Length: 371
Image 1: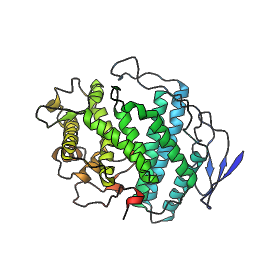
Image 2 (image 1 turned 45 degrees about the vertical axis):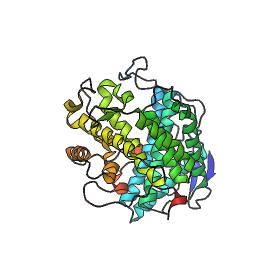
Image 3 (image 1 turned 90 degrees about the horizontal axis):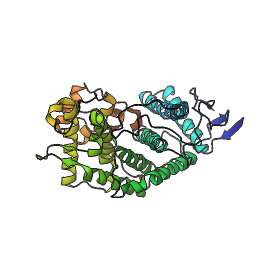
Image 4 (image 1 turned 30 degrees about the horizontal axis):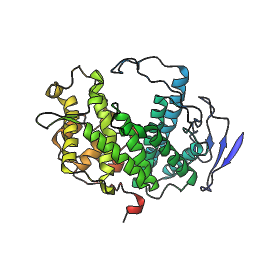
């Protein structure tokens, strides 16, 4: 049993109850936090894909090893737990429960940071993906807390160092995929871009936004436009056949977040770029509202798109409140599209509730550029 002092906090101490290189290791106790921290995963990220990789469309689910399931579950328990704590802190910001939740957020982060979790060099393709999804979730939680409850989280150099190390790993994992000859550039790269950009916003690292912007621009160049220019689609997501609509919306989540974050930091969208992104939103909305309108692209009957994959509507409608198809899609789901853990949980406290006519003061700017 080891005791790790939480440098920079002064309020908390942490007891690490066991080595954490095997799945389902004992959890960690953080003083003043009633929620046990899942043991940091420090071993290889040897996780198998849930899809049969021998199939071109990669749409057939397969049974994975117990080890793969256990590692991913341990990482997911951490990220989803952190999301719940962040949302709880916001929902109870004026009482002691909210303060406890913030203590838990700080303690949980420090626990994984001091063990260098998720940084192992050995990783499968899915393991690499799990690392970047985890970073996207964690950084989004922290950005949201910074926006909604500014100054409430104490500074912790160990956590900052870990987040930077994670972002650097994601950059190394995905850097070469920008090569023009790499034909599978897809939603994985968009999520990597948001994971790195959101970390850059937290740590005041413009080079991270520059890296993310290059991936965002590549995504816009990938779009194929209908003859009318009204619709645009991402061909690699369409290739998922009956999951094409699902993956289009899944890809839109990080793309819309990047569209919200990059322009305020000097990475402007010109009129042509904005038009292409609008056309992608049109296509995504029609893939749910009236698939026959885009039936020439969607060749297969589509699996229904779950509400949480429409979370991109919240920041999009904050940026473009008059976009007719986005409004129609939001209303079609009765506005119940919030709460996607991979983007940090509830977005309405951060961006505001769409269609109310109220503008939220969202400042997705590098700290050094804030007035």
